Length: 319
Image 1 (tube, one colour):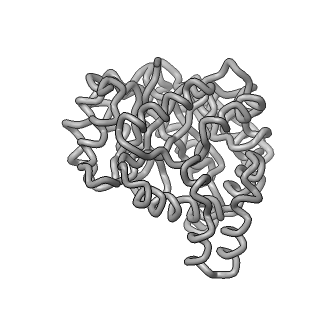
Image 2 (tube, one colour; image 1 turned 60 degrees about the horizontal axis):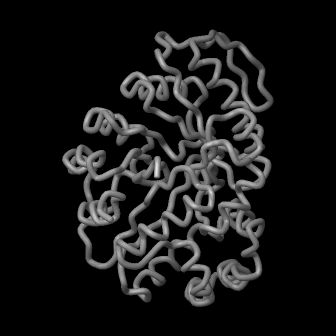
């Protein structure tokens, strides 16, 4: 297997406490460290630290929204990381969701496809060192040029959940990033994205033999995500619309308890990797066998494992 990523920072471990573990990741077989940006740490600072703690790792945010920073600031932050980790930084961008963009940041969530496309096109030029003056469909830039363009412009990956974004990623980006899927869903994604490009996915992994515990955790996570319109539409496209309809109906009615109860075990088992560390590693390899290029483990606390011990137990070199 060529790549095996880890989501940082880990739940339950302060960011400042990650240094020794991140430095250990390459020896454990991890090739990548990917951050996220929702309501915890920002997407860039953990990667800046990791670039110095483990110079062998490839680094990327999966993802930073294209709305919550201006285009120029996004280019500046990407250039900074590309300078800290030359040739090892991948900029993951995406539309994010109305919750993050509109409800939390009071910004309009308008034309997400066009905003992502326009940001991608701007970043290509800016990170190559060009002076950009352009009227895009969703924003305008007048005379921006990076003071120092990165010696190695970063690759750009686009978050893509459905065919339109997947085709955009295939045409204009270097990789596609997806999320919340089962191994057999990878083929569906590949049919729109193509067989050749890098496909990255965050996989939620709960290393415990207690299936009831894993499913209880998984139900909360699924309800939180799959009731968001973009994820609801994604899973309707993947064929889970009927299975998740009772959850969505109960959630819309304000009955959170009922919403959790009606999520089928089969859906949880599809979308949450759980079991012993050995079983979890085998399940991750099913994704790769199905066409996933880069699995990125997001470790969900479970089974009483210390976060660092879970990272070691799930490492490709552990099996």
